[in-house]
Length: 309
Image 1 (cartoon, rainbow, N blue to C red):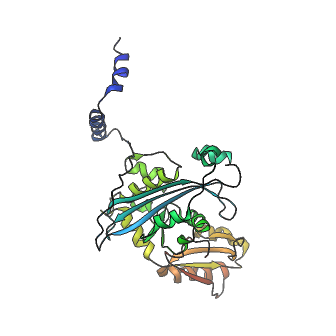
Image 2 (image 1 turned 135 degrees about the vertical axis):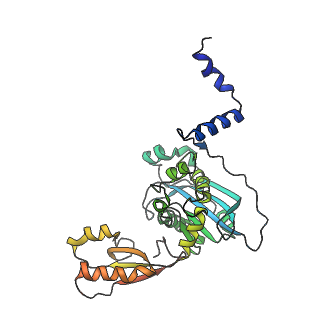
Image 3 (image 1 turned 90 degrees about the vertical axis):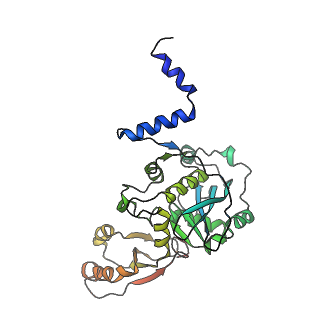
């Protein structure tokens, strides 16, 4: 056995403690960045006190992006406890289940998630089990609640009555030193990696992201998310705005509603209550060139991201 092959063979017998020490030495050098595999936290129900709150992390895998037409093929949830300040204190329970759609799983979905027709065959998600799992939680959090809430409400009405938070849009990650909001990227920022695009695995990843202490605040990201979710926002509809000014609206952050789901066929934007006057001034001065009274909708965590709004 020569010297070149010796290290390659011996590395298979390294003790985990030795690997950890090597990783720590690399990280301390400043020339390397080490990512550790995410190990899901052990389910260990917390002794509930008056200050402890319970939340749900939720992720769905679906046959497509259209909640009106496409179907859920997998639901993952992690139920966890936290203190009012946002510190996570334990995982209460985990839920993972497949659901067989009415047709084959699209090839592109299998390529992304690894979920095949054989894996979902004969499976149905028990609505009673979902209700029981969610019971006692004060908020559901998803890393794209604008997507997951619409699908969850379609299957299980209990989610219509819950408060929701979005870890992708309700935390300004860039303002806190992270250059993107993609789940995998944020997890890497916390020094971890995981098996992406499987529902419950993404929930475990999101738990670690929300427990990550932001260097700008000294508090977990969950603290900021909860604070944002509690605030009211206002949806402003720029109905009948001139077509030639659509690019100005897009640059301002407006999104297009095609009216297919019963909402106005119009550009719209969601802003905090304190920004409403500035937004109305923008519409009057640069879009309509006259006084207008656009349609306004006040949103809370109980209505935000819902297909019913």
